[in-house]
Image (cartoon, rainbow, N blue to C red; front, side):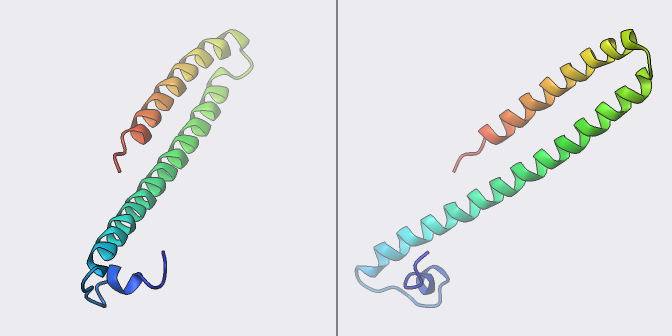
Amino acid sequence: MSGELMPYVNGEVKPVGREKGVARAAQGINDRVRVAGFHADASLALAGHVMEGVAGLDSHRRKLAGDDPALNMMLLDVEYEALNNVKSIQRRFSGGFAL
């Protein structure tokens, strides 16, 4: 954001005259940027959580199946369904942001 507008946005300077409209618009943009940053941080946190969970689930499946290819295929089917569900949750979460 322009350094010229930051004193208005931060409340350091009270705008006068036609600067009031500019300051109000700048504040709105600043607010939207801050909220968008929060949404980005939340999406990254969820993605990290999902990746850790998927890696753990995959490791658990491999440990349970051992050298049994039939059991591995059955467990892989369950893992695949869980992954699809998690991806659906993630899409709904990130698509639900209203800026």
